[in-house]
Amino acid sequence: MADIDTGIEVGTELPTTPVHVTRADLVRYAGASGDFNPIHWSDRVAGEVGLPGVIAHGMLTMALAGRFVSAWAGDPSAVRGLSVRFTRPVVVPDDEEGALVELAGTVTGIADAAGGGRLATVTVKAVFEGRTVLGKAVAEVLVP
Figure 1 (tube, one colour):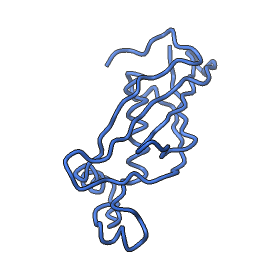
Figure 2 (tube, rainbow, N blue to C red):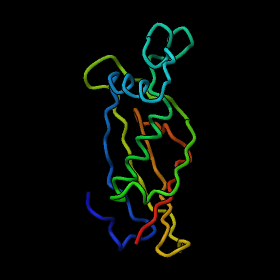
Figure 3 (cartoon, rainbow, N blue to C red):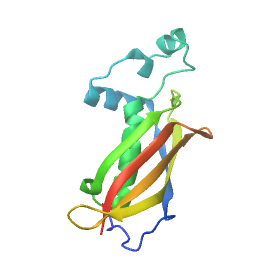
Figure 4 (cartoon, rainbow, N blue to C red):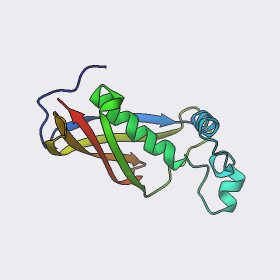
């Protein structure tokens, strides 16, 4: 990955990145996280609890936002913080394409960082089926 553009400023937009989340991704995430709640793999259980279908783990959706920001930064260690609120579920169909989540971001602030460099505040937008699925998603990224 390329180094982050040193000429960033407030208003800089991160390129929109589409991510497909499949049921296979949910299985891998469940194994890695230990979260085997059946709402993440069973249509029957998801329906019984009032969900429209199997949903992605909220923390998986947050991880996608983190990966998006760290890819932009070019170095995962540059991401100093990430916070989100889960606002809507990502319903993952049982097919090869999965659910399309579109990630975008905008630099909304830049400040001097302790120890040198600058700290960029990035507001992240995660959209599924035209609706935001992460609210108040903000990352702090150390930039040159």
